[in-house]
Length: 296
Image (cartoon, rainbow, N blue to C red; front, side):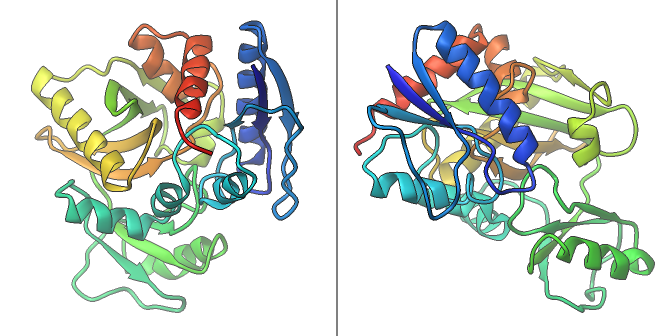
């Protein structure tokens, strides 16, 4: 099969995307596919002739917000991962929360914060400030109380014009891969210091990962059900990864849906697939097969 891997792109997560794309391309070539590697430019999307399917290894803006998906559909190309609308919804943290609440999926209390806003009434810290349309913890700010709010909001607004304030959930951080509308084994994420921010996410050795996570069976099932519910709520297809906090009482709280999760051999989606008996090459192959089921 002739496959084009889209990688890199214009987002803040470009370097991560390049690593994902290189790993996918290597795995697909090892399985006998002819592979093109393309660093796309928004507005000038060019796919090599003969391409049968496009493997999306993009992260963040343009890759996960529905932009590249719309461009590929205009070209009549099949591609991996979620469609245009699901990508648009999942990339917007406010829309994701709305869909999850409507579907009865547990999410954290939150409020949208306009620029130059004071600390909202009725709130106590700690809270988290998140740019509404960014991925990979880009611009994430942890705030203890009103005295830290102004500087944190200014920093978060440097990554987008809209910011969400969310209660900070105390508990264990997990992530759940979704493949073909079923939840994979739960991965627990434990930073050695601080929180699971951009630095701890992408600094080698800064975070430990445990898969399958050590929870009682009923708690594991609850985490997986919440993740699958969020995936369905945003209209996901084929695969994604859902981040879920687990409170001390075992109750899950969905944080966000990642429609194009990292795809290096050590990324969390491949870790979960490996725990389910699917190695990296098999996972990449399966995502191609799923993409081919969709109409151009």
